[in-house]
Amino acid sequence: MRAFAAILLAAILSGCATATVCREERTLVTIENTGWYLFNFIPLASGNPSKPNACSCRLFSKTVTLENNMKMLERVMREEGATGIRDLNSFTTDEHILIILLKRHAYRTSAQLLMEPEPAVSEVSF
Image (cartoon, rainbow, N blue to C red; front, side):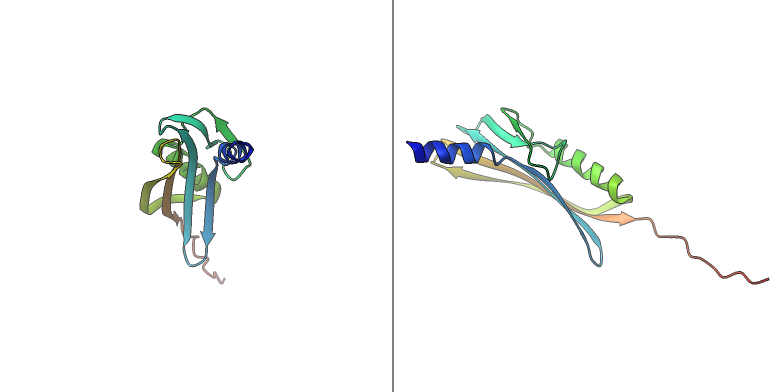
């Protein structure tokens, strides 16, 4: 019984929201929001989209939505100074644990951020 309680507590505390930016040849962003549900529909814990990448979760709230992922994407765009996006992709995954008792639901979104090119500096001679 203690092992089950420990697993359930770990699952509840592991709902998280993350936003990762990769700046190599292009600027890519990956956003993920996960949550745990009892009997497939009762939310136990979900990521906090207001505080991505922080150790913060929302208890008994359903925050794993496309709308929240888009809000996190807009925040990342502002922080990075992006003027647009391309190749936007979103999908969900479900992992059932203990058949129908516990489910981990994740919403993932990725996109390429488009940056405004810096103006060319021309040499002026007098």
